[in-house]
Amino acid sequence: TSIDPETSIDPETSIDPETNDIAHPKSPPKEPPSVTDRAAGMIFGCSDETFGECFEKSLVGMPSKYSPLAYSIVPGHTLLFLFNYTKRTMHGVLLATSLSAENIDPLAFSSDGKSSPFPIQCSFEVIHAAEPVGEDQCRHVLEYTNRRRFRFKLSKWQCRDLLQILGAGQQDLFEKGLLI
Image (cartoon, rainbow, N blue to C red; front, top):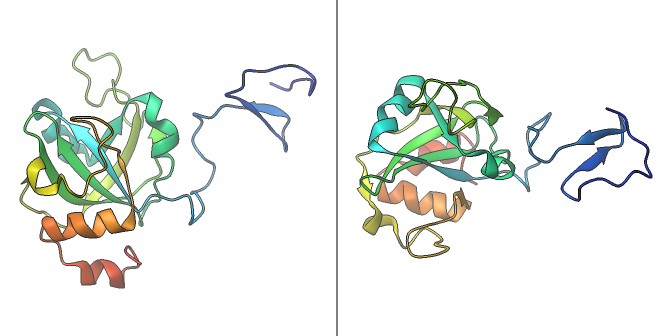
């Protein structure tokens, strides 16, 4: 929808200069983020109930409120890790194979069969099937915001430390350009 430039709009929205349309911040990007904006790694969460589905579908998801964060994922470059909140264990190593998008599978992780509670989704491939490690083994790598919550976006240094903890060989990842 085109709008008059003098029209006041919500501060969370902006105007796309090419189309003069309202651009919503939760809209997926049209292209991958720049090298400076891209995430080296990202942690997605699961429970015992959704863990198997993640690997059956090669898909992870998060709530809509995290969409700006998830849109920093670059296919073929961003390492993904899966944290099981039920068991408090970290799993990996995964590689994003798609940009994050809304409802790649609209019913994924749904207990009611109506809609996904985690609509911001990303597909992946397993690049190292590591044994899970307890949160206590990777606590020093994670950036906690309060007692049991940590930031999902990972720096390249955090990725390197998690890879070491999970026993993943970093040389292959360096050669593929995943870790610089």
